[in-house]
Structures are given as structure tokens and as C-alpha cells.
Amino acid sequence: MTTVIVKYSYPEKLTRAEAMEKFKQASEMFKDMDGLSSKQFTFDEEKQTCLSVYNWESLEKAKNLFSDDFIPMFKEKVGTIPTYEIYDCLLMVDNRAHDVISYV
Image 1 (cartoon, rainbow, N blue to C red):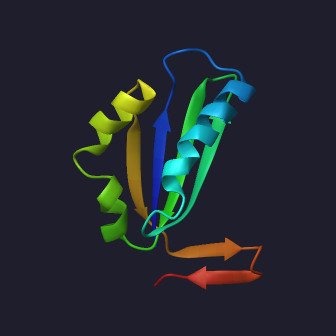
Image 2: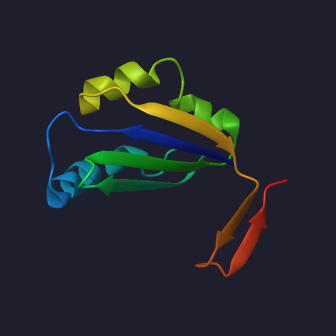
Image 3: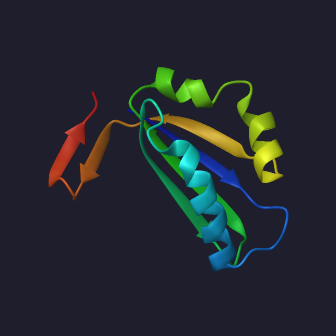
């Protein structure tokens, strides 16, 4: 499994409710996305920062979104330039499934 963490701030100051509306709108593009297991939208209202956490089936699937086109596409849609890091997820605790999953 591959985990990608994207950090960004919107150009304008947002309330929690405004951030939620933006996240709901953005979530539509991720429904049923090939290879995407889950995505979390997070927001720190005090710091005005957002983190998006993506869990992908594989690095190959993650790179379908996180290609050379990602930064320009994100800037066009969100109005800001994000930073992101890609990690190899070795182990996940899934309390909903009552399981610990190893990806090694």
C-alpha cells in the first residue's frame, strides 16, 4: 500500500463549515477512483492548513494522480500550490474490520 500526504492552505481564510463544503465538492472526483482505497480530508482552522491523506493499492496507482500534472491541476482547482510526500505503508490497523493488515 502507498500513502500520500498532501499539505496545503486555501488562499482565503476559511471557517470549518466552509472547508467542509469545499471538501464535499472535491470528494466527488475521488469516488470509485481506480486504486484509491481511502482519502481523508483534514483541516486545522487555527493554522488554516489542510492535509489530504490518500491510501492507494500501489505506487503505480498513486502515480496515476500524482504525476507531473498534479501540481498545476491542483493549483488550478484549489488556487494554491501544495506539497506532498509519498510513503510505503507497511502496516495498517483497521478497527472497522477488526484487523491488522501487513503490506510486506
